[in-house]
Length: 361
Image 1 (cartoon, one colour):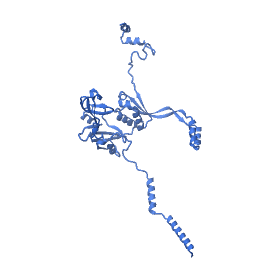
Image 2 (spheres, helix red, strand yellow):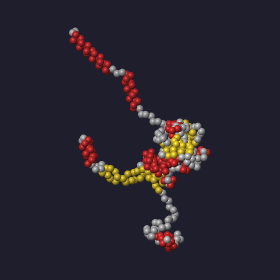
Image 3 (cartoon, one colour):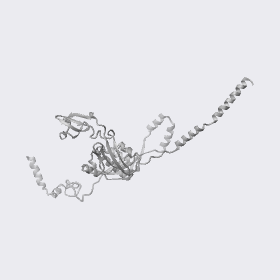
Image 4 (cartoon, helix red, strand yellow):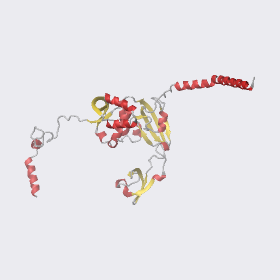
C-alpha cells in the first residue's frame, strides 16, 4: 500500500469516527434540556391569601413604643379612653388597599398572605414611621412670621410652607421645631383583618372615607350616554392596507391629508353617583383635590366616571317672598313686590317717604 493510499484510508477512518461522535448524545445533557423545557411549561403557582391590590377592612390601634402615646386608632372605646372621641371624625374600621401606602410598609408586609380574621402586632422603626429626629430642622425665625394668636410654646404653625410647633418665643424671635411631633419614635401597631371588601360601592365609600374622613351616600349605575366616536370607513381600511406597503414618507403624507370622521353613538358607561352634602362640599381636602380623588376612585374601583349630585328635598311649600313670580310681576302670577311687602306687613309708602327724606338730607 502506497503512502497516498494509507493517508486516504486514515482520513476515511477519521471521518467515520467524527460522524459517530456527532450521532452520539450525552444522556445527561438531554435530561437537562428536558427538565428545563418542563420547568418552562409549568405554570407559576398563584400566591395565596391577601395580596397587593386587595381591598381590606382593618381595625387597628397604633401607639409609641417608648411611652404608649396614642398615634391613631379605629376603636371608639380606645378613643374615649384617650379623650379624643370628641374629634371631628368617626372612629370605626377603615378600608384600605394593600400596596398603596395607606398603612406602614412593615404592617403591609405582615398582612400579605394572611386571611380575614388574622391579626398581629408589628413594631415599626422610627425611620419607617415618622422619620428620625433631625436637630437641623429646629430653626430660629422672626416672631413676625407667626400669627399673634399662635405666639406661645406648643402652638402649631405654618411658616414658609412648612408645618412645625413653637418651642420657645422670646422678644421678636421664636424657636420652631419643624420635625414631625412623632419623629424619632418607634410605633407599635396592633391590627385585625375584619373583611376583604369586594363590593365596589363599599370600596368607593372606603376610599372617600380614607381621604376625607367623610363617607358620602353613593351608588353605581350603568348609563347609556351619547358621545362622539371616531369611525373608520371601508375606504380608510383599504387605504391603510396600501399605506402599509408604501414607505414611511408616503404613509405620513396620507395621514396628514386624511380627515378623521366622527359619529354620535350610544355607549354604556358605569357611573359612580355621589351625593353632595355640606360635609363633603366644605371639606378642604375635597375642595383642593377633587380631581385627583375622583380619578383615583375611577382607577381603583373600575368605573368610567364619577358624578357628584346636589340633592334638594322639598320644603313643604315654603318659599321666599318676592322670588320666582315676584319682583314686579316677573314670571307671572301674584302682585310682585307690593304683594310681598303687604304679606310681610310692611307699608310701601312709609319706605318711600323715608328714602326721600334721606335724599333731601
